[in-house]
Image (cartoon, rainbow, N blue to C red; front, side, top):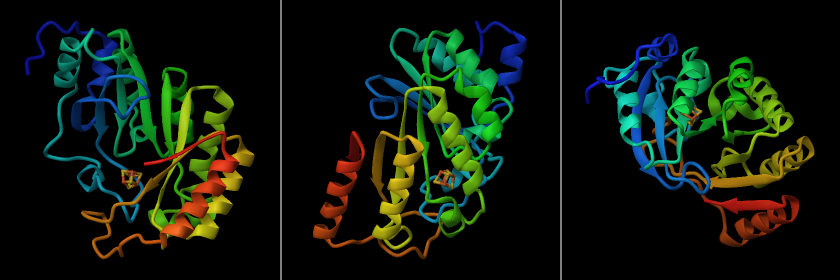
Length: 243
Ligand code: SF4
């Protein structure tokens, strides 16, 4: 792709520092009721055992795309796409996130973000520039180390509070591996999420192929027990779904 025709502004210059590990040109499932492109930021400070995006975990990669190429692509999709979603990796780790989001808004797109919220200060900074957030909560704060290999639970739950206070449109979702997050822990997590103010909750069933932890066991639960949990969550949250 060529970077011709893109005006050189200081915002573009700052956005150019964004490390991008990949781009999905069009999707219908990453931003509600909209055709969107997804920009995958490079680098994550968590190491979730079930992570499927292991190529995005290192801070840098030889496969990175330049911001100029990403922006040139988006220029050509004006009028064809509704939204652009920043995903990862963990977008909030990068200082260039805010100028990149602003550049995308200047092009006329709605903006979304998938995040685990590991950096509450940057999350707070970018939130006003986002139309929608898909917020990944991994577990109760004290259980983060078991799933993510890090003690990041308090920071991530601070970001959740910031999101819930903001009024920004969002969904909160949890990936469940039934051995890492057994039913009793999931229910306790769901109850605390509800108490915190979560009203739209999505349970994502874990896939265990090509994970960060190559020795992870398959996620398994008796179907009847699973359906009972779904009924309980359905009764708790006004909006509940699985995927
Ligand atoms: S699944 Fe976990 S480790 Fe993988 S990109 Fe998301 S937050 Fe990072």
